[in-house]
Length: 87
Image (cartoon, rainbow, N blue to C red; front, side, top):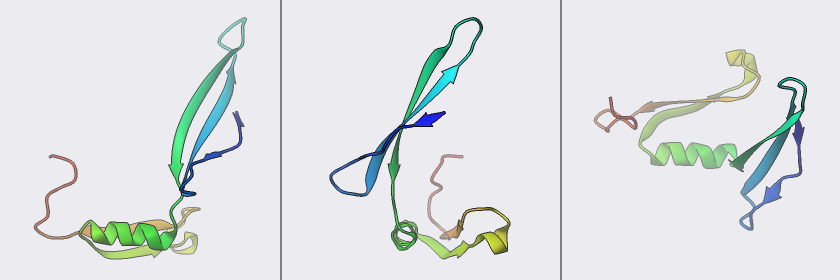
C-alpha cells in the first residue's frame, strides 16, 4: 500500500489522505484507491469535546496501563442522558 502526501485543509486541523493499493486478482493488476479525511485533535481538545457531550470521569490510559500501543480515552455517559445510538 502506498500513502500519498496529506492534503491539509485551510483550518490546519483536518487533512485528506489517499491510500493506493495494487491488487493482483488474477492475471492482471488493478489499483484500488481509498480516501479518508482525518481530524487532527489534541488530547486536550478531544477531552473537552467528550466532556461537553455530557460524559463524565473522562480519563486517558497510556500503553503501559492498557497494553494497547496507543492511548485510550475512557469516559462514562452521564446518568439520564439519551444513548448516542438507538437501542
